[in-house]
Image 1 (cartoon, helix red, strand yellow):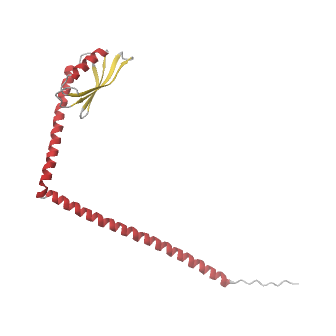
Image 2 (cartoon, rainbow, N blue to C red; image 1 turned 30 degrees about the horizontal axis):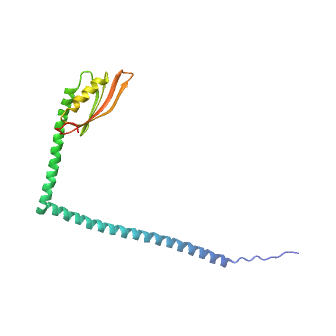
Image 3 (cartoon, one colour; image 1 turned 30 degrees about the vertical axis):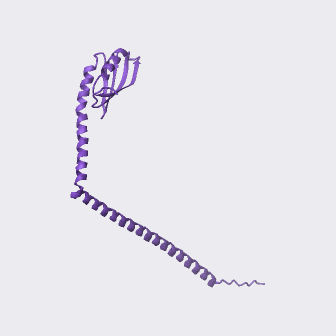
Length: 183
């Protein structure tokens, strides 16, 4: 007895499903490309608008600059030049005071005190050094307080150093044109 069975394959159904899958994948690819294109158009339009705004702003700034540079803006230029001139004069006065201040420090410095570091900033001088005891340091500070160029005298540190057997100190002098002495 033989078994005769027939196997039938429906190729039409598989082809229909394959065509559906291809169509679906092409549609998804087309949708992705359209999304990317829409995003690029949006970004392009955004940057075009920003460029137009910047162009208008540049034009406005150019008009303001031309106005300032015109004859009407002469007062503004004059005031600006006066302000710059005054700041340069103040800087020159303060620079001229540095040698005066150093001369006054040198005149009042006792022989027993040794300075190890002098740091000069715009409006202050930091002095670091050593003294054999607190007494010469105190006398020197009293002499510095009488100086006419100093506005303020700040003793940051004054401690006995066991290793060197001396007093180490750090002092800040705030200086300026002050004819009344220490404030």
